[in-house]
Image (cartoon, rainbow, N blue to C red):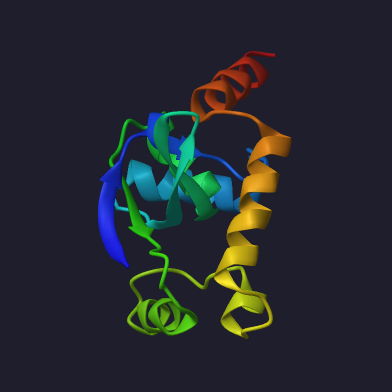
Length: 141
């Protein structure tokens, strides 16, 4: 896996964002203290002709960084990425515990994990810009 910097426009979300969860508030404090949050975990894909990065872990971090106009860093999984790479990064403290433990336990393949993420992205069908606009509107109510 390699670490890159990506823009909000390149990110495809795979999970709904909740601004009332404790993690959202924690990220607010982290970013206000000018601390860099852990990188996302993504994989490259194409939406039409546009190259994007689909989030496997870090939807809230991506949105919160975008809201604060902060750099978004991400570990990019390759075709041959395996559970050992993720476990090593976890052990080194370079990323938080990966939520897809079934992949780490080898109960699910990388291909299956990616397929599920793409299905989730299609169900959600929401960009970071749309999420931030909705959250801003909710805050004004």
